[in-house]
Amino acid sequence: MAAARLRRLWLKLHRWVGLSLGMLLLISATTGTLLIVGEPIDEALRPDLHRAQQAGDGRLDPVLARLRAEFGDDAGFTFRPPREPDETLHVFVSGPWTGTLFIDPSTGTERGRLGQTEGFFNTVFALHSTLLAHEAGRAALALSALAYLLLLATGLVLWWPKWWRHALTVKTGSGLTRSLFDLHRVAGALTGIVVLVSIVTGAYMAWRPISAGVSAVAGSTPVKPPVITEPVDQALATVDAAMAVARQRVPDGMVGYVQVPARGTQPLRIRYRVPDDPHPNGLTSVWMHPGTLQVLAVNRWNELDTGTRAYSWIYPLHIGELGGRATWLLTLLSGLALAWMGVSGTWLWWRRRCARG
Image (cartoon, rainbow, N blue to C red; front, top):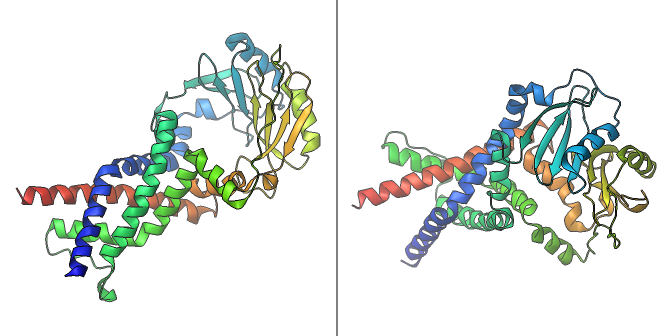
């Protein structure tokens, strides 16, 4: 009797946690799956934005001058240099207008632009990363990770078989409801840990307090960006000279991003990927004064605090780039499985409710 009561308790907890917070998980799973398959599709559908006829000379100053003329000194720019000979230069603009410009690297001309939530891929990314609710959305995504931990634990308890030869059985001759119930249980048992990795890594990236907590537990002092105390009167005029200075500090790195601040008190940051960094964009940074180009700090990825350094593995693991094609397929499978469990679980609850009248 006690075991039966405990099982009913696990069932109620599993059901109501799923119904209460399952929508967040469903949104996260669906948008994550779309991002995995959607980026190459988006690039294929819009070659005018993503593909260049020939590579450029790597100079960014002419592009920066045109950006300053259009957006002014109060806008910030993040350059993503081409990583393949046929890629365009991407410039992320933050100011009165926020979005991405696509620049032909050989001519410096604009190929097109998309606002922050303009276009299918950008909208899906914003929904996946913040639920279109900024910090509140990030916190909600972290909460959904806790919800999944409860769903996984209670689901495994409810699934745990007395006879293992029937553990993965799906009965197809006992009606649709029974078949979906078995598929729901089996999918959760087979993919639960893989889905857990995706959920936990996503929550880690979405909500910064998690990484800060990891550093605190590890006794690691947070590595913070340098601060410029005196306002910079003029915005950065030459990014090419800044890159030349930074190259001397990280000669073995490939430029991932160049973050040019708006006029004010923010330092210039150049991110590099060095050979031993698993992060595809690199976490090694050179920080510079935007007025004098004085190097303020050099932070190699493996010298960062524990919580921040973990991003080098967590980010590529989350997007399926750590481990090659097999990890990519597992990440895609985890998104599909989580979406399936959300839909099938809700449907099974509704069928049960209708059957009871």
